[in-house]
Amino acid sequence: MLLTLTTTHRPATDLGYLLVKHPDRVHSFDVPTGTAYVLYPEAGDDRCTAALLLDVDPQKLRAQKDAFELSQYVNDRPYAASSLLASALAKVFRSALRGASKDRPELAATAIPLEIRVPVLRGTTDLVTHLFAPLGWTVRAESIPFEPEIGGDSRYVDLHLTGELRLADALNHLYVLLPVLDDAKHYWVAPDEIEKLLRSGEGWLGGHPEKVLIARRYLAHRRSLATSALALLEADQETTTEEDAELPVARKAPLAEHRRDAVVAALAEVNASRVLDLGCGGGALLTALLRNKQFTEIVGADVSSRALDQAARRLRLDRLPERQRDRIRLIQTALTYRDDRLRGFDAAVLMEVIEHVDLPRLPALEAAVFGHARPGAVVVTTPNVEYNVHYEGLTGMRHSDHRFEWTRAEFTAWAERVAAGHGYTVTIRGVGDADETTGAPTQLALFTITDATTTEVTA
Image (cartoon, rainbow, N blue to C red; front, side, top):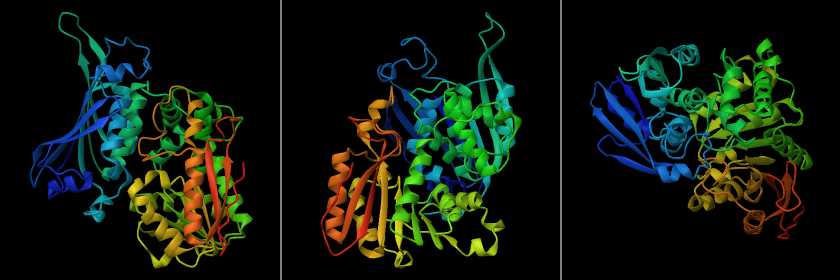
């Protein structure tokens, strides 16, 4: 299956910097269902096109447990764009999806002319238009006809999109809407999938006229998950629509909410008032911190300028009363480098951050946070890989951008080593509904600074 991305922004070859893929090379990547390639059919100053080609391995496709309810041997998965292509896009263009660019940071934050083509996509012309047009795209979707001897149109379209958008926004539109149009994900949809939808839909999904359809299809028609996602969107938008009301209120809070509550409780436990949210992303935790008057100074830090823009929109910084606005600020920084601006705080939070860091880079993060910034307390959360057995059909890690996921013993060993090496004590606890054998889905470590090196571990 194929997706092409073209720009006429001059010099057009800057697209290579934004995608972190050199135009003079063919790049290949192993993905769970085959091999993804990135190549450039054209690369000039006036026009540059990058192509993402996914070559599906039928044997690997069979290993997906026939999630599509189609034949293992005769199906359209190697050819029609679907969640397979969306997953490959997330792995291959990870930095571009976040809006991060070391070489062209200003360009990454700028809307540029873009043309996108997906030559074979399951869907109707009307649905494609209803999904992409509200996002600022000019849509041309042509039905693909059957062979002349059969006659009529197939269930596939040839999609052309043109518009002037930030590259990161364009890629996030595709990441969400390709599986929505296909309406059949190739992997089991766990509750954590809500976070992926909200993260990729930050800034546009809440106001989309088809947000109910998008949430339902993206979350594989799991009603409780769609309800939770729409409730979180509604809270962010502070509006209620009739479409949202047709879904009942979720009976159980999502894990993301449990996690935020546990972090806020840990901060209250150490009486923190000046708090760092390191790797703040789109600002979910910052919103919770701002609501709590205990926190008098809040700093959100992230390497991605796009994430910081999303956080600013989510917090409505431009509309906050002056007293509220004075309590919070956002800064761009890399957590693996020492930054004097992060020193002197009561507490720092690394919520679902460390698993996104390559293991060889983790000691640099430890030195920068626990050694140089040295807050009075540090709260760290990360997935408990032992709990993954409860996600039926899940193979591998919970998210494609995780570099690792630890068992409880591995997390405890890491936390004890970091605490002993930097003069902290640590307590470890579970977050979410715990299983007697595998523990809770999330594990949390609360580090408090001390001259002692003893470590307490609690269930």
